[in-house]
Length: 380
Image (cartoon, rainbow, N blue to C red; front, top):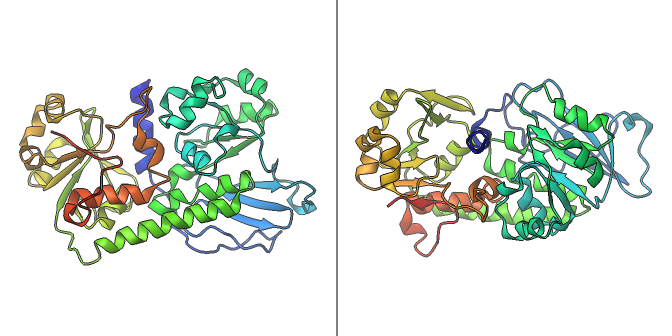
């Protein structure tokens, strides 16, 4: 079960968007003239009106056939008749259930983690702050994403459940809604740009009446990311990089327009699959990987390996790479919470500035001599 969840988390970092990124303001719904406050996220728009906001979620999963629109109604707010066809959510929320660890940092950054009532498979939450709430019995384990405990959720009666789907068949979400529970489908995991993922904090700002706080927090992340980018502005992308590892006889590499590839590009490295079109992952046999990446300067390995010996024992062919011989292998998945949750899977999406710093520390260590890795670890 754990292997399956980890694989889903990995795929969610690489999976493709079918549409190009849309920056800036998008055309508002015909029913409202409010301006979309989202600048980087391609799958989210938030239009704030007097007394209510209109939230639209696009590209909720690969080949999604519909968009999802929600009305966030403030106290005493008046929603026009033309918008009554959309689900209405009373805000600010007093309680919430979320279903992805990437949502936990947003709640904590906004100071509303105490509003969290439940989470599927709570062992995968790594943050000490939310783990304290779990240990105190304030956050309940509501089953697994594949099979949420509907009866328990009815008992908890949260104001809102934030869920996600992976395809056009979402019976679990349908069942929750049929039980009278409010459900909002989000798509932060489908974003393929670092700042696009992080901007989903604004959704939680809107849900909890903390729009200004979310804007300030996000602007700080944008500023930090851009300042970090400036460190490598004069650098050439010379270090060659291999990414990924073997899984069931195939090697999955990030395509050139993916979330991971964007970090590698921004950190001024020469990612060997950067010209591969698309935003998903590409599966290749080992021979193809070795042919192209045997001489790579660095290898960023997926998977939690304690050291080089464990890495090589998992596949003896790994010893053929120069990066292994020269001890230039890194992983972002070695840091875990008290019950086994992977810190990178939880925090990276909301703090892309720290991910970028880690990559720059790997490829251009002289630029960040006093910086300590947040996620990355060099295998010894």
